[in-house]
Length: 346
Image (cartoon, rainbow, N blue to C red):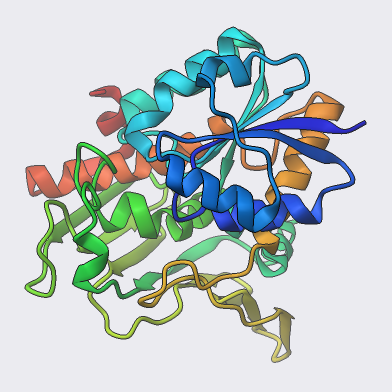
């Protein structure tokens, strides 16, 4: 069965999605691209031989041959399209983050749940081979309890990146490095380890950038078993380097970086999984493979057919939203805070 796709948005990330869709041409058909920017829409359609939609968005979404809405707009523009999809009973796969803050993200997840539609979020780092291997090791209890570690996102963005209107603003993006860049690595930590119990953070904007929100975060995360992880995330580390998780367990230490997993067991042997890959940590934010996006799409399509939750479901994506909300709340209040308490304030 071929599923029909309504593509909403034609911005910077749309090419990556179009390449992923091209790989899946035997199972999906793009019925139309809608964008308020006609020039970008037409250019995207020409590059990938896709049909444009010149009517209203709700008309495209409501088409009988559309099954899934692929939502690629900026975060502040997502709510109306999710509402249209829910009303038309169409499934939704959206770019991260779900929305600009925890409250509105929760609203969109609940809207999809009430409508009974499958809701996925493009958190593609979960689909790297190395991430999948580590998830299996943890689920099977092969590494023992978490003892500590580090979450590091040493990325770089030039000022020209933030000169784009709305980029790094609270009104359009919901913030800076946490919700726009570090969200992938933080989501990976939550997906692998569960949500931390409490956090303490400081945020700031370095002299390298003129922007409304934060480009640097330093913090600490404590899990319920007492394990402490440090956090360092920035877009002010020239020329940019790979993000990584360095985790210490009872029976091994692991290093997950740039798509490669190294597991050093305490009995002396070392295992390696996956391949080194770029993930957009430098001046070119799109310098990464489209295959992870494709794998998210494949899982989403299977979830629709099998009537199950996708691996990167909207509900599961709320975990990283709760964490980011708590980190910002801690920084604003200049003290440590329980993640549950911070979420209850929403």
